[in-house]
Length: 418
RNA sequence: GUGAGUGUAGCUCAAUGGUAGAGCGCCGGACUGUGGCUCCGGAUGUUGCGGGUUCAAUCCCCGUCACUCACCCCA
Image 1 (cartoon, rainbow, N blue to C red):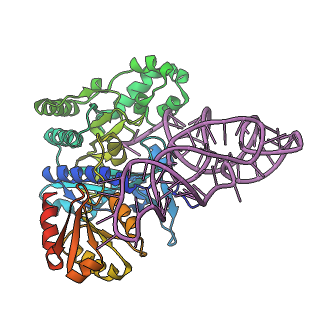
Image 2: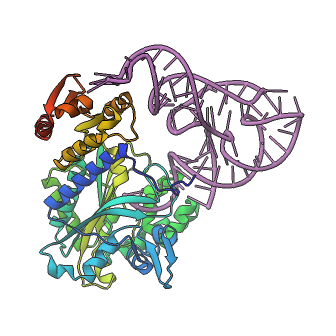
């Protein structure tokens, strides 16, 4: 048997309803906040993520589906969307085209990781990016929008966490301060932390090893090392969130694993997701556009994991649309007329099923029942002779005969009241 | 890349060192042109794969693969 490859999954008809709901709400929220949809390729030059996401990140170092194509290009399936969005923004000079460069996109991402609950090799994200505005009012609006998105999905028991990781001015000083405060204690930290100390000291705050916690809690905090502009910005962001009445927690340990973040970072955490509890995360990236060869424009955005949202979605997902009618042919002679009847109803906009292979009438009725069809249209020798169709309501079992040329109108009428 | 757990019918799961069952589902019939309920009948497994121990392995051992969960990291 040929199976789907590790970390990819089929979304079966029974689950598609949940996905359609997530996507519908995502589009609705984005459009209302003034974002325009954009669709970028799932394959890009490897260089885009090396420069954008960052050489030191795990994503780039060990998680990319990268290969050399037949033309000798180094390419990769995208592990995240932000660099693609920035590339498209720069490549098409969208700042000139759009009144507000606010873009959103839905689609699959690829990371070569060991799958577990809420984490897959092919997963899907809603990606939201806004360019060209430094005003903390935008940070507030983006975070408020993210919270609204989750709320409109009906997902409760979530927590909004924010932080500021500083900028190119103040972060180097903070990293140095961290290392200095650590001193020789580095050697007593876990192996991951010793590695982090070398590559990106900020990420020591991600550590969950119990033995390391006392040391980590005693370390200096970002808020004590923010430069004046960053501090002012962060304070303003919090004021905007307060004004919206949003509940949030400031966590100096929210540092995130991507290199390009500056100032504001945030996540929405959910329960019932396993340990992969971030439903969405994002932040500001004021150097990224320039770094990727574009103009000096700030940016801010977030990515939401659709699998994780679908997982957290409450209630039963609505299944596929109900069948309006199931056409049953009694006796082999009535199949041609039955097929024309089905066609006419379909052309009229009704959802209609009909069987094949000359199955017995009983078998057809069983299938009609199983299909969930509201009613069955019976067509046999008697009906053919009288130019009629028998309409049977499945719920009540009541039947009535209707003239063949009145069937479509009758069905359209009753289907409206279902 | 690391660790743990689990692999038996389409699905959910039983069973025993002597080559497997149930429920649900599926197909047909009772009811020659009428579903659901009921009753009757039927089909489907190389017990993940390979090797070892044994007279005999689905069961015990080893390997391998797959899945799940967790670590790293992230959505």
